[in-house]
Amino acid sequence: MSVEVLEQMQLAPASEEGATKLSDKINPPGVALVTSLIVIPIAIIMAGTVSATLMPPSHPLLGTLQLIGSPMVALMIALVLAFWLLALRRGWSLQHTSDIMGSALPTAAVVILVTGAGGVFGKVLVESGVGKALANMLQMIDLPLLPAAFIISLALRASQGSATVAILTTGGLLSEAVMGLNPIQCVLVTLAACFGGLGASHINDSGFWIVTKYLGLSVADGLKTWTVLTTILGFTGFLITWCVWAVI
Image 1 (cartoon, rainbow, N blue to C red):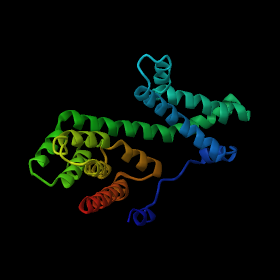
Image 2 (cartoon, rainbow, N blue to C red; image 1 turned 90 degrees about the vertical axis):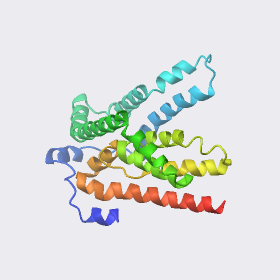
Image 3 (cartoon, one colour; image 1 turned 60 degrees about the vertical axis):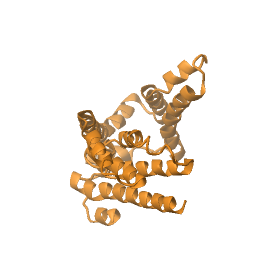
Image 4 (cartoon, one colour; image 1 turned 180 degrees about the vertical axis):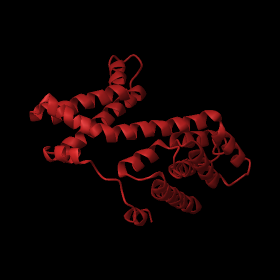
């Protein structure tokens, strides 16, 4: 359904005339190189996170790995690598490199600013306590455990935007209810909460703004496509989880 709606929409123009002329002079890098530049900071951040879990506090490399694995440092390393691999190693002058980087700023700046604004809006809702109050109200309805996990997580996701907060809050609210379940049932309850956190991505979710801005969609078009898509995925995953729950 989202694909059909997208086909009927007129997307924003990809670039201006100046950016098109500039792109004609650029020999694009290979797929492997671009992919590696995307994967490297993710791998560095994961290394820092895993080291904090697996290494003892007294390990001499722990502090170094955690420093390098912090998001700001990892992204800075990726930026330096990209500058060297994509510009200096290919013989670009500083002026040519500056022109290319400058042409990318308008698109990236809009995405960063709007994403940040969406995140701030979600944080305001989290701090206001509206999500917790809504979850407590749903918990008092005395729903079956699996639908309760999904609905509470979905309501939290819709009210404050963060899937992580929705899933973790749902887990805390239902922690006592799952005490007597076997491990497989606990996993299914967790999956139900995760699928609830997947759905209803809209204007208070920073991911919503990333998708709409990169695809050139308006807010209305994003709600018709991205929000509908994530909600369908969430409900589909929950129905599959519920079927497995019924079998076991």
